[in-house]
Length: 384
Image (tube, rainbow, N blue to C red; front, side, top):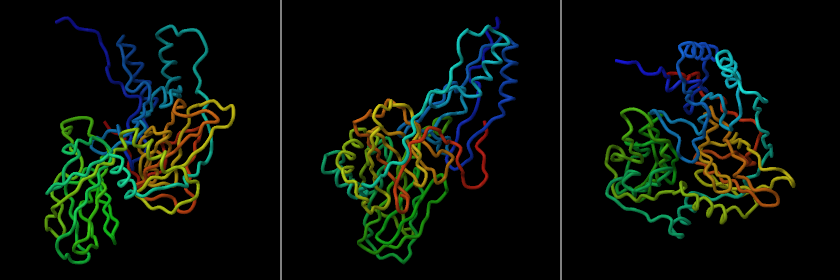
């Protein structure tokens, strides 16, 4: 059999990250050494990734642990399209085998640093639900059992599940959600708790009385994107029990933040006030800012330090998930094309599910990315 051309179809200059684990780093000397060996064999090569990317909105994946918004991947061109040190090293190796074009080397593009933006206005999840129903964005669905996201026709983001307890449980009682996919925020009149598949937490104590509601805000944290697990249903995909008694009579309401018109409408209605309002999570927090007169709309990075977990929007565009409290990603890439020039107003909305900052609520727009922040423990992500 005649041999075809030699080609490496996926050559990794870096690796992907996972929430709560250290930013992946590879030995660049080994990457370049192997790259040169491939060229010595007169083989072709495709770098994956050559240009780092961004999982805007709810498009991050999982394998099965959820991956963050940034898909920078240690690529030769960064998430923002800037040449990295890896790019220059690749160029140096290529130059030993092929003629390099004349001209100046690319340099990182200038970035925008705005500083702190106050997020004074806010609205609770209950108020958001009332707004979505009133405006016709959501129609509650009732069922004897919890329905999955797929059964509700809702692919991404969040769904609110509510049931009323029909018996008198002990106090506290154990709520069991073995089919949580992926993370659920549990609320009763006296309890806040979290169930989470990626943290193996399926049972939590709750205080609830007969004829009181149990509400669970469920987040799809990212669909499995590789291998045999990619029939990946989301939501609550099993019975829910209270002291091992099955709870029935459920109402489901999607929170359609995957639709830009919803985020824009929420911002238009609730971001008007500039007076610091008392709000707790889950809820939406709003702020506005203007660029300086004459300032170009350059790329920038949204720093969510001090916030808990959620998704961030600029001018109605979903930048993706933030979770700086667990890392490693701290900043979100903001393409300059999303910003409005002076004197137009720009808006920021955070849908926060866990813990807004105590006291002053701010985010910052900075000129340097940080996808290598602190994480709990000492676990690394590097693998194959």
